[in-house]
Length: 206
Image (cartoon, rainbow, N blue to C red; front, side, top):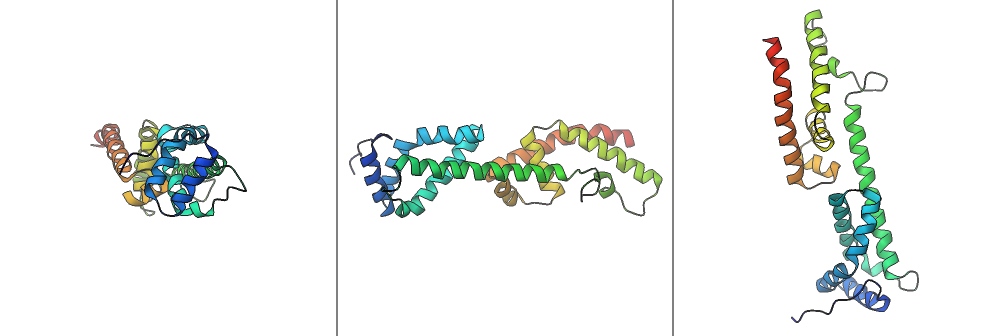
């Protein structure tokens, strides 16, 4: 198949025609639309998310929505780039909200008792444990807080949600809106750093 001529994101009529072809299920038209519009739309997503990888994720989600819903576009109601920009902005805002929610969940794991969560130390020891065991749990809690604080934010969120909320890697990837391989890497590296940090505490108990 011969290569299609590139189009500009400023070419209103051409974009309308390409969107019509996308609505008809033309995958080549979707690629042509992406090549024309993605650079400007990526900039919009980046303004919202302030993170290159997340902006790219939002852009991919947006074009998946375009592929599914191109038939809903009406040229009489808005220019093509305005319609595409609305979708990208919506996906970027949704992605930002999901990440903020995931981080709030991770922070709430260590609530000091003012909220509904138990203090971490209370969850690390049997309720019938004696004073020595409770003291050790309190020390472990402080050490764990200290070691978690040394991790990068993304690793800390991943480890906390994976092991304190018992989320699978797949569930974690969905909640943090990142690829599965990225989640596995964050958890693996975070655990390696935690192991080194906690080893000093374990040695002190020996």
